[in-house]
Image (cartoon, rainbow, N blue to C red):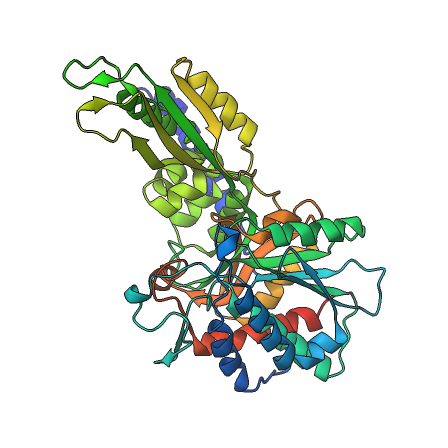
Length: 481
């Protein structure tokens, strides 16, 4: 091989390597400086109050006739008694049945307000599967056990603890603060919708909205050993499709093919395969921008050069369920029904496919695609139940995000902070229309084992972690710009 040929081959390769190394070297950390605040001490009774809060069975049911009104009323009475300064100082409004909106008037009402969200309701439990009773608030080995400790009474109580302390210290925020505590987040979020609509009717555009969602993860974010505090800048949309197949049916001794069951099986597989589109959306792009500088070589090179390595990254993410959900509009069958006799071919069969939509995907897009995939007259498609598009993506580079990230870093100095996409749903989606800065973060730590407790069995929070939650909200409100 001549030197000229070797040159023409090696020069582009060398140029590519130079570009990749250069882009890696100029990639700088986005982590906020850690600020030092004066030490904040909360009374030990805050743990007792969370224990008592857990004992109220504020369950949400789709069938509203089952909702436990007396439990919500009792919970409200408990809050009024335990946080007298809050309820004396703040204006209270009630929406839906038991959703609360508390308004703490700021010194300068021309400034847009901070809105802090949490929800009072919890999901149902299978008592027999719990190690300790789910509504006991029992403390064992530094863990407080109970439904709602993580989702979401821990945040609600911590917010009130911080507010009570600030008010008793004669603090009044520069800008107003609203506390919005939904009562049915676990089913349809009507309370949050009504509160958001009321704020909009008052022409209130929040400076920032902070809800539950992502947390401080330990051992979950790959390629780093540090805890990572994730802030959700958007959340996926939700859509369920009912696919119904019809055929002649008849006796199983003389079957016709394809019958309704065969059709539903064929098209559910086809739809899930073709509707599960993968891409790296804006919140995940931002996450990679923040993660990349914290990595060691050669991982740093891969994240610094996504213009070249994106297919590799997407392939890696698709290898795990949680990773796949971050880069894919997922589609999976959740309900299947057909027939009731073993010797009768059913005339109809149906399946429900549940989709979680990436930002950039809409319900209309999915429906159009589904109808283009299925052109069989024996198949019908319709939306089942509630459906909503992905939440608007909030900026991960604006002053609001940077302020929140700074408070997190200062409260939890061992943790890195990064934006990301929230895979589940929250009340915050109802606030995207009234604020450009909606963030999803709860200030507690979780590892892979503890995450299973959310909506699962044995939900619990570390007592030492819970003690830091009011500190975070205290600093967040006291340092408001």
